[in-house]
Image (cartoon, rainbow, N blue to C red; front, top):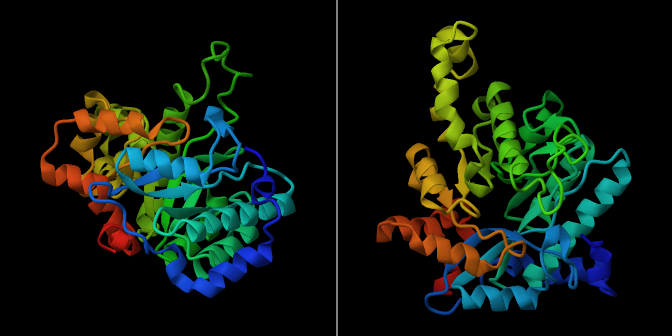
Length: 348
């Protein structure tokens, strides 16, 4: 992804903050109602600088995105300007997070009602992350945070990240988790991963499952229950693996006592605490597996724009056999329950 400074151009940090201060908290509230029938809330929307095609997607701009959203019945995209890549240069990570987040907030100012913000965090930098949590929530009024499944060799359940999750828990934050490449499994170690094959084909769904398991076995979900996690792509392959792990109660190498120690309430019960968006998981097999494990109230609509056209997810979602109530809940109502300030994006 190109550097946000390229996108902001001559807009200074002072101008960004001045606009936010002048308009107050309502800058990111939906002050322009969407047209009738265009009320979906997309919680998986990549934002990037104009002209940038990061992640294999086409050029992105708020104007292009709004046109795409309008054509496909989407009122609001909760923008994900990250991720912040792992780096030993902590100052650079802090600088990138601040610039990404102010850019994301600027989009919300300029297009009221159309873009929210899952603020980026330099998770490999504990002190930097704690400062950015405060700034993003108290100054930018972000909806929550967007982070990656791993940072270097650290998965999200790593004890080193506990101070960050303790603060997120105290803030009752929404945390959106998007997969990324991990050192274990890259083209350097996987001989079959040659273009056009890349991490999103298989490794990213696996990495989502890996980080969910790391949060479970390290006690994060039980010890910090007020963090509301949203996992991308229907939870990756995790829904397909839970029954396999639960079945280890009959395996002599594990047994029921060890499983109860790791998952006191059962692995399925822990999984049901999480939220999921469905981009790239709207086929009946994947989506059916997710719905058997997660309550409908914990499933959200996502598109993975601009990596995929908005129409891609909308068309697949519309083919699913859902009751009108469940469809409405997934398209909009469940997101509003998590992010109540978007309730007015249709009614004004």
